[in-house]
Length: 385
Length: 98
Image (cartoon, rainbow over all chains, first blue to last red; front, side):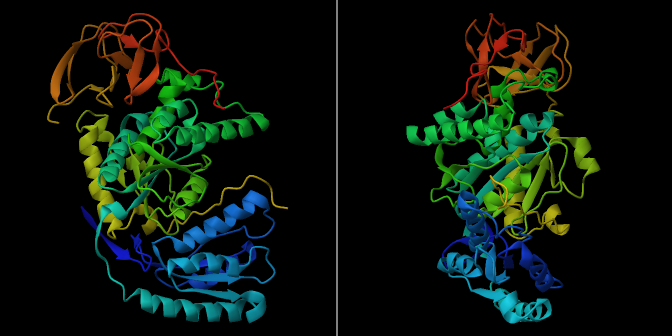
């Protein structure tokens, strides 16, 4: 099965063809935005990090910014630096070079202020746009897709309709040789042993258990025991009996494939099939981590509705709640409430979503893209120094 | 699916289904399971969003939804009976991974 995508020099395939502007530090974000203004198919990252992160946090910021630059949805990259930041623009440039993309740097302190840097940046970006326009879509096997999965604003419909239907899509994509990312570690609590059992090796299974233990221990250190009091009385009144059932309702959105690998935040999956990325539950940080890891498209299930979107990857929003769909039609792409009306089966719905995913991968715009919704936030463990 | 169904089975391995509307004891329902139409008579009232047994579940046997164990039964549960916190316990409750 094929979609229409953009083949890159490194062999990877994009569902979009953007020129990306990366501010290497929060201080250059304003100039990055000014360069992008008025230019179609140019996006900038609203990055606030780049100075004051240490250790693992610094690594994650660099990996995330480089990961957005190397994501196959990007044609070329302009890095905008200030000049005195700790994470240098050249470090980001060097990380992107192996992808074969053109990547340039402008530095505000060297060029001499906002106006001059904006003018220079616009000149470079316009050149990049001219080259980007020469590239056309071509038929590409769906096995080239890395699909990120996410749920946010869940309600009782999520575990019964939208997540099982997206699970069908994920199983179909894995059967075609594609890649699926499951993430959101707090949501595994209570079902981690079940996911670990599906791991390709016992070591991969242990990595899942360890990721959950680290997450729980961090929450306990902050005074919160996630496992206690879950499922909540409201969950039980709604029909959820155990913590396993509640957690399975979330992770079932990634289907039933064996688990091939556990990735750290913003890491790229080398394997095909189902992989797990250790991310927080924060919707935007989770989304950012998966796109930095190379996801070219996201399926996002929601019960209550959300505007969430990525700067560079199409995010398809799916709800099983008819009222939410009607109330938030400008945000939600697909209504799967027929499952709960008993009018459409889960497999039938999954096939319908798969078809829509192929259309979006081939260029059809999502609601979040039409609204220009470009959320970006990097997961951090410690405050800035 | 041509006819409207009142319960949903998420995975073919499941031994429970979820009610899509509030259902009364004695009601006879048909639903699609493993490619064919099955009939089941309810032994209990089932609130919307709550579960019923698709087959007899022995005491201590796994309760299966999403194709996975969601807990084990604390008493024998008959086909068509209400399945919830009164006859199912978590198998991991309170246990933390290392």
